[in-house]
Image (spheres, rainbow, N blue to C red):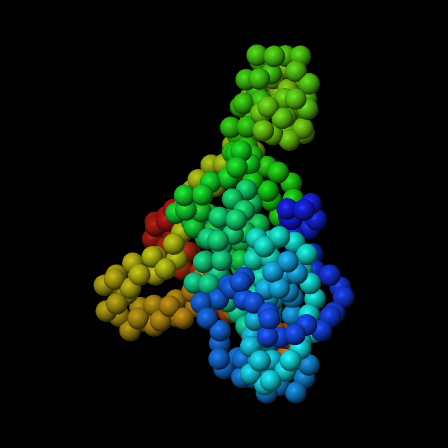
Length: 317
């Protein structure tokens, strides 16, 4: 997803498994509000061997496996299997977050939001999608957290999940490049890209558009920006507004619908934790039931929309 401070991939973990003493291990990269005592006890009582923990070599702090270390201490183990992470301390924190969102005991929504806040502080240049992938959140949730933070991005660019650097505002970047082309027609494409803060491909496209007298911003990009500025619906707020509607509250069928909606509202920020909590042997059944529920709700939505259209009601925006 990105690169560490030494130029290597930030999530690189060595393949070699070593035996490390348990007592000196530290917990500097904490991503939870606190340890789960029941989970520690369950691990300590487990007869099956644990997978190796991950330890940040420079600080000997646990990156992945805090509960396993506590369980080892609880049952008196002196050593534990481990692999080393070779990156920086801030890279180790991001790896700790991602490891805890992808496996093991799921992080709470509050833990994931706190982790995203810290990653924004550590890596302000990362895109919302890159941070969302690490923290197990929706990109829109990360964007909201970033908007509440005072930390911006360096140089007007963000690094995406693929490692490519992109301008925060591609339209503004294209317009900067266009003005530079007009002012200095003979400027090379690479210099144009560097001074405008855009990619070489974008600089080449803007120069070609300027030569034809076209707008530097393609119609597709303008349309996409228009869609992006349209606020996403707040489903909880919509549900709260429905619960206050007398035409639903005071009818048995309406109250039944409200109960259905309340039980089946899936929040994007909670989805990753719920998915992580599904045991592998239950996955096929859960997937089938979820699809069946989705089909039933889709049919209900189509019937309700048809009824609304027949009454002359347009879809809310």
